Image 1: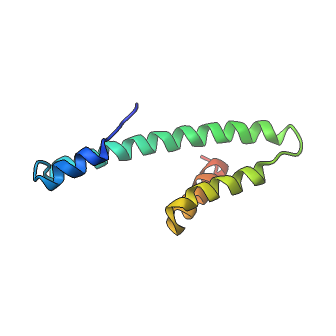
Image 2 (image 1 turned 45 degrees about the vertical axis):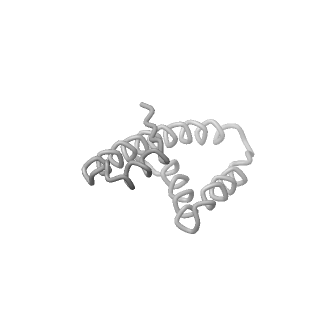
Length: 94
């Protein structure tokens, strides 16, 4: 499922009073569902990669994890924490 929102259009409509709180909450709910789906898929792929690397000897997984954290750090400290959480999800037992 792909969920896209034209943020500028939404912001403009909100300023014009065209969007009510319910519409905004529904949009946020849709985005949350898309995020959850993407995180589940990312976790699944990372676990497959981790399993493949475990049997293949040395890898640059540490460097990759640092890159992930740095990428999410563009969102600030909370983003950095999000990157670390995504890595932990891939390592966690279900």
